[in-house]
Length: 131
Image (tube, rainbow, N blue to C red; front, side):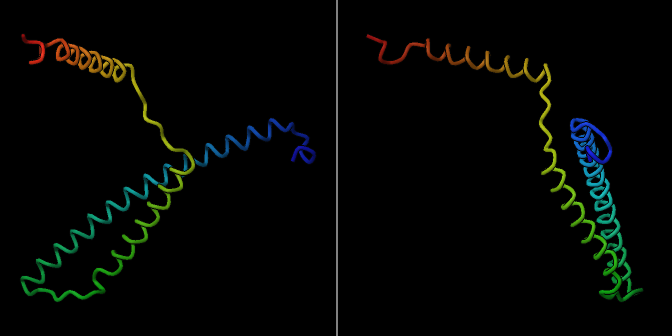
């Protein structure tokens, strides 16, 4: 590419890095969309099952396997796609937890409180201290 387009090697490397980062963001977005779609399909399937149960109880309908098959297939496919997308995202760019100043201060205060409690317990007289 360097010879063909007359570009510097660093320019090519930076472009590839940016493309990789851009691709990872799109994969993450795709995983979120697939997860939401999966949840919506789960809800639709539950509503269909509930409706079919009501209609079956009233004698209005005799459901068959084919009534649920299209939704079940879509649900299964979406579930697999969401899991695959999540696995890709986690492998590409795992998210690190964000530690805020407040988290740090809370942890420090809790540690100081615990140390004070331990010192208070250690300074109490024990049965072996009595004459």
